[in-house]
Length: 299
Image (cartoon, rainbow, N blue to C red; front, side, top):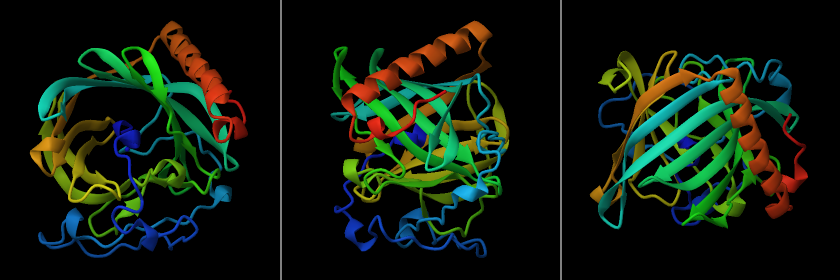
């Protein structure tokens, strides 16, 4: 679900009535209505909707300049905080970098992001994720290849790529997000039970993180079909992107992350990140022949 989100929530599509929306069903793009009353929270919304996808409407797909979700090659975000594991808060760090690589998926050229996830200082996941912006300024999520590790050893890679095994792209960020937009899928990867969805929760908020204080902050509530009344609460600032992550739900799901660094990589650092992403892709072709193996190489 991040950027942090992009893979933050997994999901068993059968756990919460996932069979009510099959991968083959596609609803019209969500319509916008008046601001909801305070009682109309993300938790009270009906089933999420799919958004119509048209590959012909991505004429400048790699120019991702959405004010809430800008993805300029060479930009790096670092988030620090904690996550809860076995009812214990443990240090958590996520590093997200926009590479200068692109990859074609469903006829759309996407931007490749490189993500590293650390728990208690140990690398537990590294990932390539794929984004593109449509001609209306909406940012779409096209899939991910995350590799999970334990004690430095590879464990698994729950890969999903739009267009393969009934997976679908979804909206990562609207060009003009506002309360009243029905909850929407951020993607759909049924083969690995990936069913993340989001709802505009608040607008016009204020928040401070180590990097800066921000006004007019957008807040999204994100979850997945197998998480009952559990949400990641994500804060987005104009031009900065995602700046904070919180939670809504039981204490056992508590997670807090704050933006502690936002920087532009030097050419050498960007080249090193590119090499890391390409190395992960090479491994993806070896271990995910049925999914990643059906994609064209990043370039």
